[in-house]
Length: 335
Image (cartoon, rainbow, N blue to C red):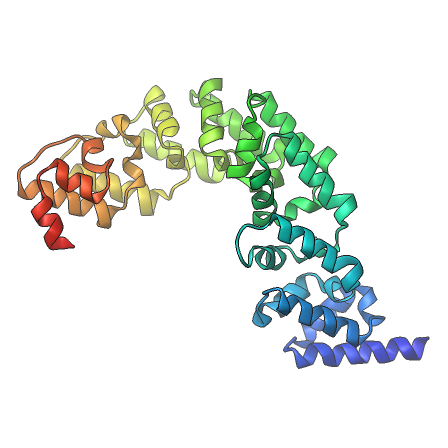
């Protein structure tokens, strides 16, 4: 038995070397998965080829296998094939399943009956539309590894505690941000919600924020949110004004101050000659591209000595903008 095990181990060493793995990674995989020493090269080759056949690029396979060497040990027909076939029924686009496996190869090691089906039923019970359930799992395949009772159940309880337990709200949040399930309630979600309430958001504001931009709940308070909040205060916004900005355009608390917020405000004040207070009426000002939209539209309006509000200037597509301000000739020339 020892000789057979030794031969298998030696064969697998050559299997990995032939596919471009370096010695350190090979040793790490043998430590991570003891069963590699016992597996026959034929099984490993069969699994490797199958992964290629379902759309995973061969250049990505070494990275995938090094993350989850167990993938070469699993029975193809007993384990891998049933999971892939089930995932295929959830997919709506080509290569979605291959992409999910590349993100989290461990998904192939879980049981369809014992793990995948209960997770899908959990989402369904939360009101996630059937067509969206697959999207959630394939976008964040790590979900299959979470405990329904202790991990995902705690997230649901937290969301319900801030008033999001009606009309399938939690399901809508999961569709928008499947990654929220991976965060700690006590270390991330609750501190963030408490910070948002401390700056003046009401419970209703917080619910609206969670529904429209749920990923803000998982951002670090001290590293991100406080920094942006202090910047807005430094720019003269106060109290309810900041709340209105956050509710009107939630990414304002997570966008880069240096690369996004500050350049736009400087352009508004120094070039356009406007007051920062105008942003309160149109928080989505920060959503628009500086060079591709703000600069070009301001230049066109300035050339014709036209005045308008920020929303009139920005809250429309190119054609409507040119039509609104009688610039169709210029629009035709630019096209």
